[in-house]
Image 1: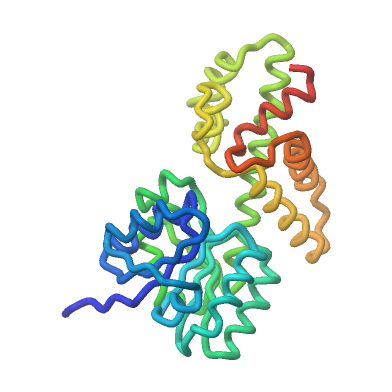
Image 2: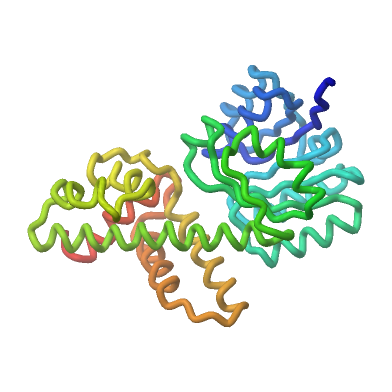
Length: 296
């Protein structure tokens, strides 16, 4: 029996998106992409078999499933608004950004009015895993929609968890990022204190690496803090700050006191306010900004 491949559109060919889109087209799905600021990713994907659309509306008109990999809720809302005239009844929009769950629910309701399903499917891990097709994905969708989009997600993710209904994927992603960005703030302060009391970063690492406190996030963080690789973990400080603001918003709506989340958010706010707002200022670089506040 011949497998039927739905026509997939992809919007957001950035650090994560290019690798994800590469896996979609290389694993047999007809893929349509659209250019934004830089052409390199589009040109690469076209050589692999993708087709370039002239606009977001044109992309939507020719696709059964549209995957969005954008920065956050404002960018997703703008893309959906631009695509809406081209979306056809029965299509699915899959949002892989880290977004505000309340905005996701509102967009889902608006799309339902024209017969289009919405799925939130945010990601975990790094551009390296996006390229390899080994990301983690947490999905909010109805059972029927999840069954439909799961094979597409499986082209770029090996761990796929159906969390629950629409919006639940984004809620879980914020909890995930609260933990990971909390690690970043904790590591940054611990490293500053370590250096201040005379324990070199290399000796600190010898104790933590391979012990109970080691983890994958620690290793990519220390790829910069110890080894100086600025691209060890390519997730910007700006996106981290945005995500922690979303965490606080979710907590406020749920009437949950989150003093630790506020402290983590403030660590990234400090970095943003003191020069860490560039496109190549990544999460492990937080250690530099925290060190400066300690006179290092």
